[in-house]
Amino acid sequence: MAKPRFDDVKSGYERIMSDLKKKIYKPIYLLMGEEAYYIDLISNYIQNNVLSDADRSFNQTVLYGRETTAKAVVEAARRYPMMASCQVVVVREAQEIKDGIEKLGIYVSTPLKSTILVICYKTKAVDRRTAFYKQIAKVGEVFESASPYDDRIPDWIVDYLRSKQRTIDLAAAKIMADHLGDNLSKIVNELDKLAVIVPQSDKITVEHIERNIGISKDYNPFELCKAINTGDVLKANRIVMHFERDPDSNPIPRVIITLFSNFSKIFLLHMLKAKYRNAPIPATEVQGVLGIVAFFLREYETAARRYSSTRAAAIIALLREFDMRSKGWNNASTGYGDLLREMVYRIMH
Image (cartoon, rainbow, N blue to C red; front, side, top):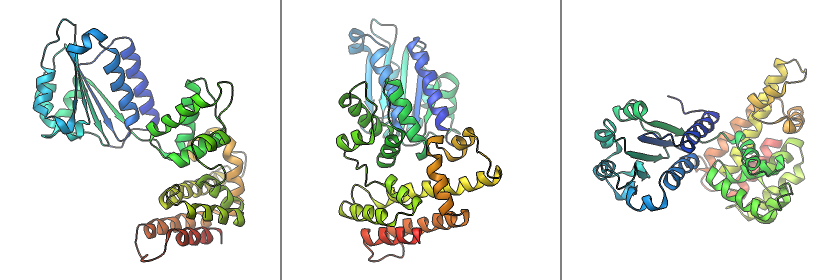
């Protein structure tokens, strides 16, 4: 079964949180998936809000997978609360339970109504074909958290800051996404820092990011794409030289992923132009197919005039070749700088 769409992850999170805030609780929560951010938000809310401070001392248990067993989890879940209406048992890193999570099946088939069992199963999903999964889905709540695709992260950054009554330049959001990847917890840490440092009335800009997070506004994979898209050979080579001086901040896999996303969008834009016979493309199509807001469309239109659909497809194949070479395939001695220079040269020429 395919992983859930990121929009479904967000809506699922919001639905569960709405129930929790109304004190509508399920006996078991299976929180699983590759992205830990929403798993942590849900489990932390349950841990910090279901019981009062006084009740928590006697009626809340937190276990860690690598330090416990399924038998110990079952024993904790089967206890009755002490002078409270319920108890909470939170199992963190449940994917590391020594004797296997499936052995919790003996409990999930007949859970206590007075226990709220929260199972945090990170980095992967429980097999949906198992009786263990099916029973939890029947009596409890299953939430699967998937990582967002790279092109969704800038919008997610904008939405997150909007929820905090803050604003950010789209270009700044794009640079953060390119630099920080799809780890939402890491992104939130940096955004929360900026929200404290930047005055409430100010929009967060590229300059704020450069000054406070250490991402250069002039030398980053996003700016390399812009230089390549516009055919600015001098700027592209300056960026490559900067990357060579600090390869740890801009590893080749990150640069390749950013370029792959860029040329995939250029290729898809050519497909949309053919579909609409060069008439204006609806904003919904720009968002849905390219995964960008209309603000960035002009940049890709400029690039599409320079790189045909055939050329964009060839560059995507080229990037796959360099990804393999950066990992050692057919490349015994070419260093970081030379490999990056060759890749950019072959893209632009």
